[in-house]
Image 1: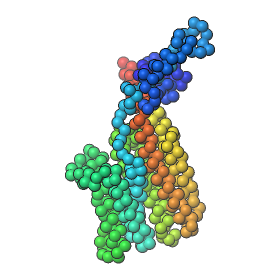
Image 2 (image 1 turned 180 degrees about the vertical axis):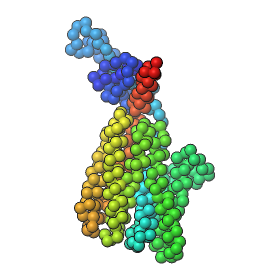
Image 3 (image 1 turned 135 degrees about the vertical axis):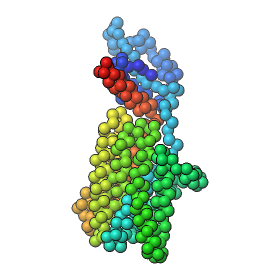
Image 4 (image 1 turned 30 degrees about the vertical axis):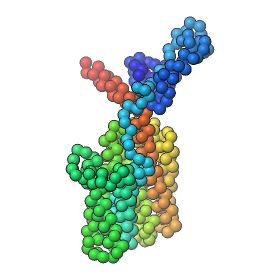
Length: 363
């Protein structure tokens, strides 16, 4: 690990903070042994410590290069599976918003919206739990998560949000389909709506509580991103399944959620220095670029043609697709940042340098 600042040109500045693009090597790049063998195998001026084309006698400093021990990541990458976890995030968020819209519609005399909200919440919550159990590997592992409630653990608290929400939403959807017990249906709808907001956002707190750099650094913004994404998805889906005369709350929720998601996601993608890089690169970059396009197009179409049936269906599909792609993008960006040591070490050095500067000013 170099002791100076890695610059884009490859040089090093002693006593500084390493910057992105300056000789950093990914954890899955060539090993130290391979790099040494290549260096020794080069001919002529490189063996003498000169770059090709350098003037005779000119001092040359070797390129600064970063590598972790044996090319391994510094932190352990989460063992979560794809597409299990991104689908779990998307379905849970859509279910939470749909449940809230169903309960609101029931209170304001919109029976068609109430029905679509309950059915969407029930189906999405059951599928969400299914993907979570598939990621865990065995169903009993989910039950083991409910043995103890630990308020300081987002995972433990999240389990006690997911369990009552999915039970209430699933039961309410079943009663809605069967046409039984209207009072029980309203009670179940109210319970699922009560847990709808936490259901849509607790996974962002869970992500921010990990050591994964591209999740931890923007931890204050991620709950707003997930909330906006859930509002866009739930509003879009219920808007698509509801007659336009009753879908006003869905349209408003979808547009507000899309605006919130786009605004805060811009901060996540650009406001955290080097750890924002993974949101622009590889799979994450492609997912998030497509997500922005779908979300913006869906919101615009909702405003322009959301009061027509075809426009509402198309806009709802675009908003749901944008929400799904956002979850995949955030997930992939975090995984990429866990694999590359740069995203762990650079912020650490920046914090150390900031503390040293503060200490020198105090003295």
